[in-house]
Image (cartoon, rainbow, N blue to C red; front, side, top):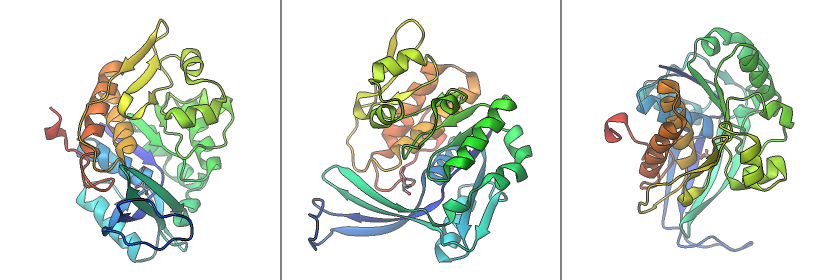
Length: 286
Ligand code: RIB
């Protein structure tokens, strides 16, 4: 099965601490790591580990961080031929993990260079995909262009609206699936989540953290429970969810089954530190 991911590629600089610092405070952390990340890259790696044939479309800088993330893609058997090297530095995410949660500051860097020319150049790859996934750490004009291209060519597209984009509802209506969390759904639609789900049956799949996933099946609100596991780091859990959902849906087009599989995959990710380090391989989920 072919999955194309159009999106961000970052290097994550992760620090762990017992608590978040106060504004203006200097405090000791307990550990720090440099890990491959970026919502696009995470989703691409997760899909590859679940057995998909994955092509990543994105940009990295011509720098040491760019080399690290490209090497990581190769180790995870991704097709890197659609990744452009640009003069901007590779995207960097500064991540603090504390108090069972995280905070992230993202410096977009090379991700800002993912423009419509890349969509034009790699049309053939997108057209050949069973499913395309994108997120919102690349320019919104590119996302709109991709949405139009996929809609015009009947290509299944998942839009993970994170971070929340400024995008008109008519664009959102064109995607196959939209996968917001509760905050993103409220920001995008300025309505309560239940109403939005009812008005977009079988299209909006809302992730609800430990409470699971909700969508409307045209008749009733569906709730697919999450798996209860000990949580070490939630970074990348949403990315694993999106990738696993894409892979499972592309395989047999069964929504509830695909969500259950995605919840299981995400539950593995939260049990380890870092976005990609704890992403499961298909053998762990069957
Ligand atoms: O979704 C997690 C990702 O968000 C991290 O890997 C970080 O790079 C940020 O983009």
